[in-house]
Every structure is written in structure tokens, then in C-alpha cells.
Image (cartoon, rainbow, N blue to C red; front, side, top):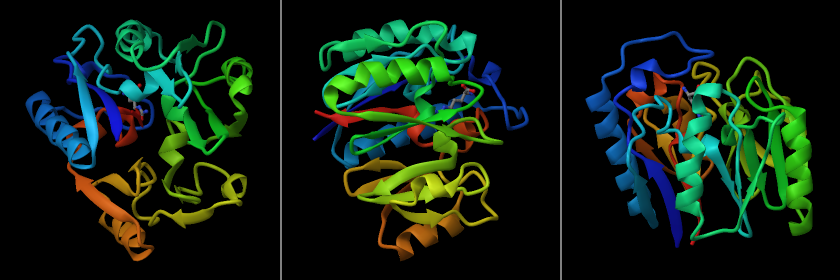
Length: 254
Ligand code: CIR
């Protein structure tokens, strides 16, 4: 059994932060419909979905992943790298407080949850425009008592570490080798994205299944050929906001 915290799409989504994609007009109603279908998929895969109301003053607030890191023992409220997103964390802290003791990263540290990938007791943190070494050091100190080791990983040409690599099963990652050094993950089986689908490395693992965008059919085929149970969703309008599959939820064991 899992819980998933999500947040409804802001009316202001069109004013989102963008780093590596060009601005295109976003149909907010369509984004809302896609987000609702995404939440339905999470329910189908066994999540109890806690849907928070939209924060219209924060265009990117639907991307809850960046505001907190949820471990089995504790949750860490982040200090997001983009200043426009820092006001999103208070209500996330409120939503998570019933389920985990809360810890926090502080200035000068900045970190987005999209840069944090956990595999077992290993926590990889992308060094990116959003996440810095100060936050990596803080996270290492915060998580050491629970037996986690935290390792910084260089990223290039992408927003977050999880734009470049995500876990798709026990001991398996899906990876875009142009954006992160694949050697860092040599202990795991690596499934490479199809080179024609550069943004295809972000999959959301829920138990034995992954939720995956319907816009990367070639990589989807590769995943299925490797025996990964893939459930596709349409996320086109959220992708225009540089969002992906993991970023729209905080999934954790209930
Ligand atoms: C941002 O730039 O912060 C948003 N427009 C997109 C955030 C996507 N977050 C994620 O993939 N974890």
C-alpha cells in the first residue's frame, strides 16, 4: 500500500519556470484532465492519493516532487532551487506531517526533489542549476542516522538528475547517457532510452510497475521487452512545463 501526495494544476501553469525547453502555449484545462488521469492511474496501481488544492500564486506547484523527499523514516522538506517555488513547501510540510517526522534543508543549500534518486540505502543527488553541494552535505548529515549514504552526481544539459536516470525495478535503471555518466550506475542493470527520445528517462516506479508518458513509444517498447510492467499516461501539457512523470507526485509506503 502506498500513499501519493499530488497537487491540482495551477491556473497560472503557463507562467512556469523553463530551463531546457522552449515556451509553448499550455492548455490548462487539458493539463488538468491529464493530471486527473495520472492521479487515477496512481489509484489503479494501489496508491491512496492525497490531492492538495492548487496554489495559483505558484505556477509550478503541481510538481510536488521538488518540494520534499520522503523516506521510510523521515521526510525532508527542500529549499527549492528556483526562488519562485520556495512558497510551495509550507503546505507540503503540512500534508506530510501526519505521516513522517519532518526535517529540512536550509540556506545556502538548494535542492529539488527531482534531483534525488534513492536506490535502497543509496541516495544520489544531481548537481544541477537547482541543487548544490551545500544541500548535498546537509542531506548527508540528516540521513546518516538512518543508514543512508548520499552521493553527488554531475548532470549536464538537463533540469534534474531524474530527467537523466530513474529506477524502473529492483536493481534496474532507465538512463539517458548523454545527460549523466552511466558509470555511476554500473552496479545496476541499465536500460538506455531510445536516442530519438532524449527526454524519455523519467519513469515513476510504483512497486513492480512504472507509470510512463505515452510520448516515448520506442523507449516504452525497450522497457517492455526487458519485462518492465509499463502503464502509460498522456502528459503532453505538463511536459510543456518541463514536468515529467515523477514530478507530479510524492509516493511513499503507507
Ligand atoms: C520547474 O522548472 O521547476 C518546473 N517548470 C518543472 C519542474 C519539474 N520537476 C521535476 O521533474 N521534478
